[in-house]
Length: 89
Ligand SMILES: [Zn+2]
Ligand SMILES: [Zn+2]
Image: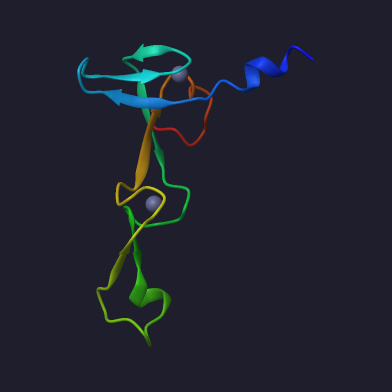
């Protein structure tokens, strides 16, 4: 019953502006970061609305990706993702 405790700890990976470093809730301040491409299938953070639906959209209409908010991917902890085949170092 007691091993449920570890599961409740929430994982986070955030940029600490004051320290100018990324902070992983598992590893603390990390120098090693990786890049994971967005899993939503966007192209560099955008969806081409025209390509999806040329009747209702104009050429060049782009919709910002809600998953990565236009970033095209995510910065992740390099230590946590060392075995992630999608991560780029
Ligand atoms: Zn995206
Ligand atoms: Zn980590």
